[in-house]
Length: 192
Image (cartoon, rainbow, N blue to C red):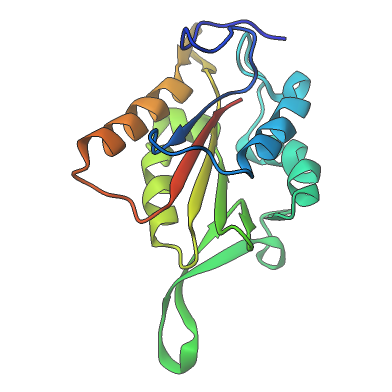
């Protein structure tokens, strides 16, 4: 088990680190099996102590068997036929005019799953995922998987970004301020 500094109420060797929002609600029953699926791939994807060099698609590929076993439809490639598209707006003749590609979806629970890697560190993918999931029809929950730390080289110097903590700060602010209420029942943030 990896060891890293986190909330004092959670043992340091707990992997993965996760938070459920809103914090005044008990996490639904689907949370623990999903967290267990992430825990099962820890040796291949953990960013806690070192960089993995994995892209978000690589992490999703590792997680796919566990998600499918739990009943999720999972994007299997970037080709049009293998994408998971969810409608946002309908237009003429009941055709979806606006739809978003997502990484996985659970129809029974209305769970949108997004896995991020480097984009979450550099270009606000976390914000985009929260807003887009909020617009998807039938979405009740968002699961956002972020690296604990994204490591990279910048002009020959090693650098890192605490991606999970940035996501945690964003969601904590959103839910605490109540100025931008989300139309979701809850958000699960998982640091891998």
